[in-house]
Image 1 (cartoon, one colour):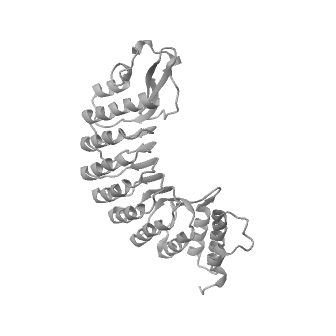
Image 2 (tube, rainbow, N blue to C red):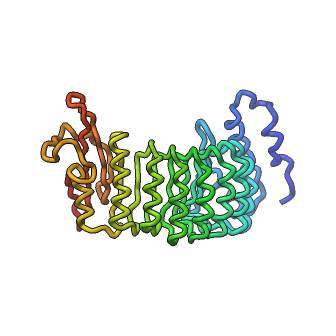
Length: 347
């Protein structure tokens, strides 16, 4: 397609004509839509399809968010070129999400390089994206340019120890992270230990999902140490790992400390090569793990502070309520277990 001067939107970003009353991100949103509409003119069906996909992926309210999902779409070379040309135009982007994307190595590297253009980015997600170790190394480099990042979601990105170690080095610098998901990765001991060690700097983190990352006892002990610094932790999800009894109890001791300090913690731990004895200690926490100040038999419904939880999987909800009259904390563990199609609630 011949270059169309009307599609050159750089002046649109800087000119105040007709848009002086817009906020910067609102002006950018309108400029980006104009850019996509121009790209569609006299273009191939594939280009039109990608432009429409980008347009539908863009969200605008008080900020600009791009949630790009290609579950039933293949970009191809032309689509990747348009994506890479479009991304730098979203200078005020706050959310960048890629889901179910089969991206080429060059595209992933270019996306990583573009991250430095988004100083306002607070959420970055790669879910079912074939980053691989090379892509993870590139993204890790880009993460160093995102000091304000608050939410990082990395799921099903096809990495091994090399990719996990690279990402862990960048995670150490993301001290503003409040929400971190790192799950479904077939990494080894080196990668898991490196990542758990990096968590020590995440003192503001509130939600931590580390499900199914082949975490063994050594990495779990690193996690337990890191958790002692996490004074804002509300959710800890570590199901489907290989933690074992000893390391799990070390984690649970820190969980107990957090519960006594904050009042509650949602804790998912099922599927970690645990013995029945360990499960029993955790489920009957008031008489064992949490060492409640009042006997288990004396707890009543009035002592339970209800919180929402998933009733189809093993999730433990630890709740503590300050009893003003007695000046003590009463703690109850509520566990929901999915067994042979039936939900059972035990407390």
